[in-house]
Length: 300
Image (cartoon, rainbow, N blue to C red; front, side, top):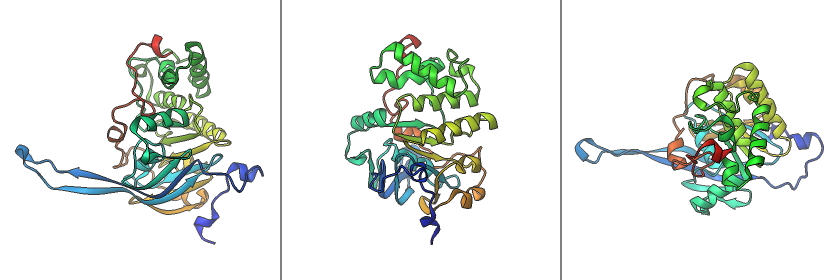
């Protein structure tokens, strides 16, 4: 039996509650994303450009109740793959079906609404709004959904307490450590109770205790929704039901985390060459919906 056939069963399968006919929440077929790099020249002269293939022919499914780890060295395509799964970007070729919708056939506004309703995203670089408090940052997606202020405040406060920041609700990002800002970003990703949670290096800025708290929360969430986590951290990846290992944008194998996590290259201080947040989000806010520049009073 190949490694790909020895994938861990999802938590629901292991508990005997999975249905063989369960539909995947996310389904990718032949997923490819290419970017053009260069092309500018001195004094306005045209220069040569190259095409970079960040994700190359990836096919995979992610079901509710499944915790999938994405492993691979820097530049292997992890961040780009997460952006495609979450509907932040669209493929050059191939398809991504998210909650039954082909993301490549949707308008930008339709994809933004799909993300707002179904997806939580933990970005590698936080993307917190500096003028807003931690609680207001967490509540921003609820503002976009029209949730009443009292309910927004209650939900945001609850999530900040769950990630160990109950005493930091009124602090702005500039008053928080890198690890605290990361946990605010995690709370914000969870505020809309998403069906799919994607996280790009979510423990990269955290100490051991805080990282364990966040990973335990992800495991809890994966009991009834899909979680996809990209990381260089072997301890984080070991929590996953299965791994998808990328190299040069291609899936090398999917296998039991115990077989592969120990071989993951430790590179906490590196960033993927394909980490193009600014290119794929269009300058938008937390889930690709225009960020608010209003006051705390507006957001939370």
